[in-house]
Length: 312
Figure 1 (cartoon, one colour):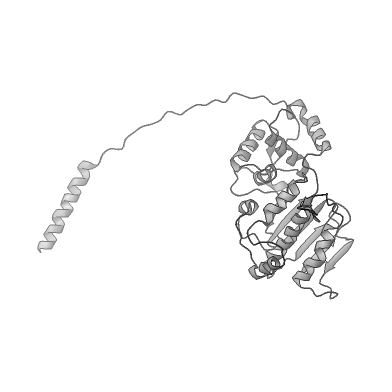
Figure 2: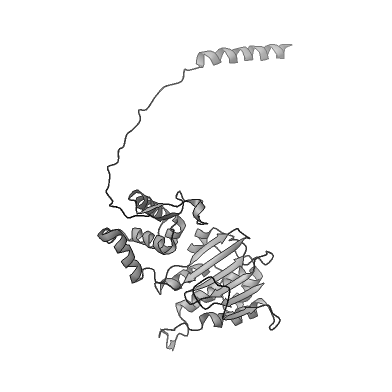
């Protein structure tokens, strides 16, 4: 099942302005789906003036990112599953859904250089017409294209219910819009401006999305996992963030992360560093009794018994 929907507003309504699906009015093959959907996705995107050699480039980094995303959702789809391939265009985002889970961990896929395509022949067909390179560089191109506009980094996640599916959400929203900064400054006061950049990124994610996880902070802040862990730990200790009850919603984090999903504290407080009390427990160095005197007679008896049996 192939499905493209252009929705009018930034909401979850099921109505659409334009739709392309298997209705018998076109061939229904994957390449025709790509040729018909790609112009619809990039329609309305502005192309800045930029020269490549002595000729003007006819596409922007956003065009490249959308082309890679559309190619990926087709070549990585598990067409034997119940889920359909779904492409959504909204005024504030682009969404891509393909049946099946990732064949490599999401962290490695975002880094690039780990190609493991589910439909290799299909991917090879796209490469012959200049779409994709089968080098594991699709997601880095998507991230780079969105980063060039200072938009919020695309979100890649997997879901198991009601069926296995992989979701890619590409929002055209500034990472730090002015109204967001004003809300955070009003909430936390002058202490917000003195926080490190990574701490401000974590608070911005929690304010916009309602929750921040270890994996999301690594993706948006382009942070090392160890740095993201330290950042979240400090925000919790300073009571900027609090642990989120898993029963409140389907927000989860990666299994490798020691943190559950975190949300903003309900009421702002004054944060004071308390001295850490480092008490060391006394070390008990007790040695077990040596059994040398016990084991030697045992082995000697065994040796005598064995020798006696051999003589018989």
